[in-house]
Every structure is written in structure tokens, then in C-alpha cells.
Amino acid sequence: MGHANEGGHAGLFAAAVRVMSGMTLASRFAGLARDVITARLFGDTALGSAFRAAYAIPNLFRRLFGEGALSAAFIPQYTTLDRTDPKAAGALASLLIAALMIVTGAITLVIECVLLARLALFEADRDLTLSIALVALMLPMMPMVCLAAILGGMLQVKGKFAVPAAGPIVLNAFQIAAAGSFLLLGVGAAKDAVNGEASSNAWHGLNSTHAAIAVAIAAVLASIAQVAWSWSALRGKVVWTRAIRDARESGKVVLQKFLPVMLGLGTLQLNTMLDTVIAMWPKWVGPTMFGHLVPLDERSNAVLSYTQSLYQFPLGVFGIAVATAAFPLLARTANDPPAFASTLRRGVRLSLFIALPATLGLILVRHDLVNAIFGGSGGFTKDGLDRCAAALAGFSLGVWAYSVNHVLTRAFYAQGDTKTPMRIAIAMVLLNLSLNLTLIWYLKEAGLAYATAIAATTQCVLLAIVCKSKLRIAPLDRATAIGCARTLLCTIIMGAAVFGGQLLWSAFGQNVLGMHSGGWIETCARLASSVVIGGGVYAASALALKSPELRWLLERNRSSGGTGGSMSLNA
Figure 1 (cartoon, rainbow, N blue to C red):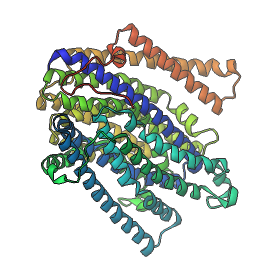
Figure 2: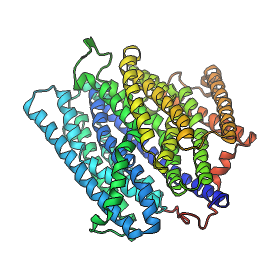
Figure 3: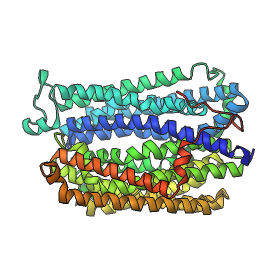
Figure 4: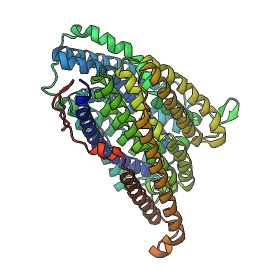
């Protein structure tokens, strides 16, 4: 296969990106709704910090064991076997799932025992006790979400991108139902602030603590539902077998790749978990660090964690969607350098085409965004909202790098090189930790955000440099560099338009619309106008400058054969 199939691969790639982005967009909107509701329930309080920390732990394992490292190590091997020997592919899948359940089940059991022993043997204040209890309650999610992620990877190889992309909608829907029920009953952080955290605010004495427990249970039930849905979607498409010994050799290949891939692909997740641990330091460890009072408080993790959901929205909808759609195609074209290079460069260009305007846009609208999402009648205080905006500015600087890193890292994995991204990732985790422990003394929790962005940017530069020497493919050839420069110009034009619109709003908007200065409705209106102006100007600029990325996203799959055959992208 050569250039003849390049158009087919491009169309297949674009179709996969559209499906992944569309379903992930719906999922992210559901996740945003979940965050808005839980923010109103828990606010920027000790309970809000504890809940978000407990929720982060099973999700870390999901991203590392499930949709992250294990999937990246598994998909290339499974793709090859599925094309040549479906029975062997089924044996590998059976072996992997059995091993995953044993390992994650054992990890869950050990951690649960440690947490319960901590509660039983040592005294702790109410906040710490509640934090440990929430972690213990939500930890059983971990095996389920890991399994759902692996099943989702198998569905992607089968060309069914919609089901795994929509799976998180189930998780969010369960939590929205549970959290929304408590809001309707009058429970919320705003009332807790008036009546006291442990006071009875609503029907039958319910308060925000009861709501946290209910939402945690809903999340566990939802993870089970995700597995059931994915398993059902694979019915008749996989040759499951108990003869897993037949897959020992291919299983060893996956296992050998797993640890390096876990470190290489999980850099952002590991850095996020480090951020969580440091933000929870006052509650989990103590008020001092290195003999000095920690410049963080009980609100820090709530501020940091809820802010992460805002920058991860465009990253999850588009950045990871591009990388997820590209990975099976990179694996299929690993032995076809022209097609491989074309897919890689398109992935980089599409990532930047979406992520660069998201980076600048988030920085420009950060105050309006956090006030619109977490302000109004929500549970966040004015101080909490200001701190969210400061953290969002830091995280936003790295959105473009987070997106490109996923594409570049998967290019190495598709070529069987897991060690290079691992070495870079280890260095970036250490860099992020060093920056965390330095910047918190000057910027509080926003320092954790800036540290994450700096580490991601450094990782992106290093991966791009090493890609040329290790894979003998330059991610930025002349055409790609020109395309990226064009995208940057469109982004600058968009940013100028949004900034100008904000200045005009400040001068005339309130008088024209008769809105109360600083009100929540005004904030939402100003945010909406910025989004409309930014999106319209960016699209118009891309059309005027004839950016091909818009056309790529609309390309149809013209391939009816090729290395991997055609691939259905339906649900």
C-alpha cells in the first residue's frame, strides 16, 4: 500500500474523528452538567475537596490501566491478530481481561483494607474521616472502569467508535440523577454555609455529606452499567475462549510494553494525581511542608479539580478524540512510511487547529467562564471563583501541548517504541513535581496548574525532536509547518476579535442591554458573545486563509480496502 490509499486513510481518519468528537462532546457536556450540579452541592469546601480527591483515584487507574497504558500496549497487538487470526485475537482479549480483573481486584482489596484499618486504628478529624470514607466507597469503580476502557479499545479496533465514546455519558447520567435529586430537595453548599455543614437543610435531615455518599454510590453503579453496555456491543464480534494459554506469547508482548507505556502515556494523569496529593496536603498530611506552613487550604483541591474539568473539556472532546482516532490507523500503517507520516502529520495539524484557539480562548474568557459555571447561585465563594480563574489561566497555557502529546506518543507506540516516551515522561513527572513544590509558595494552587502546563509543553518539544531521530519521520515537514503557522495566525485574529468584543461590552454592553453590572446573567451573556465572536471569526479566518483542516474534518471515507480493510464507524 502506498499513496493510492492515502485518501482513503484520510477519509477514515476524519470520519473517526467526527464520531469520537461528536460522542465525546455529548459526554463532556454531560460531565460539565455533573460538575455544575456537584459544585452547587459541595462548593469550594472541605467536602468538595474530599469528594473530588476520592473521584480522582479510580479515574487515575482508568486512564493508566484502561484507556491509557494498557489500551495503548494492547491495541497494536490486538489489531494485528484481529486482521490475521480472529481466534488468536479473542484468546489475547480473554487473557488480558482475566489478568486485568485479578490485578485491579487485588489492588482494590489491598487499598480498601489499608483505608479501613486507618479509620479503625487511628483517630482523625471529621474532614479526614470523610475523605477516607469517600475514597473507600468509590474505589470499587476502579476494576469496572478499567474493564470498560479495554472493551472500548476493542470496539475501536472493530470500527465502532461511538459506544466507547458515549460510555462516560452513562457514568455522568447516574451521578447527575443522584446529585440533582439532592438539589431538588434543597441540599447545597450555599445552605450549608448558612446553616452549618452538618445541619439538616432539607427533607428528612439530608445534607451535603449524604449527597456526597449518594453520588459516590451512583458512580460505582454506573461503572457496572458501562461494562454491561460495552460487553453487549461486542457480542458476536469477538471469539472469547477459556484457552488463554494460546495467547501467552502475545500476552507477554503486551505486558512488556505496558509499564513503559503507562509512564509514557500517563504523564498528564500522574501529574494530575500529584497535583491532587499536594492540594490535599493540609488534610491528608498536615499544615506544614518542609517546616513551613503550606500556602494551601481546605478549598485548594476543590478549586484545582473543578478547574481541571474546564480545560479538559476541549482536550477530551477534540484533542484526545484525534489521538484515539489516529492510533488504530497509525498501527495499521506502521509498515507503510508514507501513509504513517501522513496520518501523524494530519493528527498534529488537526490537534493544533482545534487546541490553539482553545488555549487562547480559555485564557481570554477565564473569569466569565468560571463565574458562569460555578457562580450565580452555585456553591463557590467569590474568593473561590477568583482562584479558579487564576488556575484556569495556568492550565490553559498547555492545552495545545496536551493534545499534541497524545498524538506523538501514540506514534511511537504504533512503531513499537515504548521506551523513548517513557524516559521523557519520567523526566516530565520529576519536572512537574519540582515545579509544584516551588510555585505553590508564590501562586498557591494556581502554581500547580502552571507546573502542569510547563511540563506538558516541555514534553511536547522533546517528543517532536526525538520523533525525527527515532522514527525517522519529522512531525513538522514544510507543509505541516506552514499549516501550523496558518492556524496560529487564525488564532491570533480570533483572540484580537474576542478581546475587542470584551472591551466593547465593558464600554457599552450593560447600557445597551440594561443589565446589572457584575450579575450572573451579564456574565453568561458576555461569555456567550465571546464564544460566538471567537468561533465565527476563527472559522471565517480559516476559510479566508484556505486552511485544509476544515476540509479534512468533513472528508468522507473513500477506502473500501487497504491494509486493514474498511472500518464501519457506526454505533
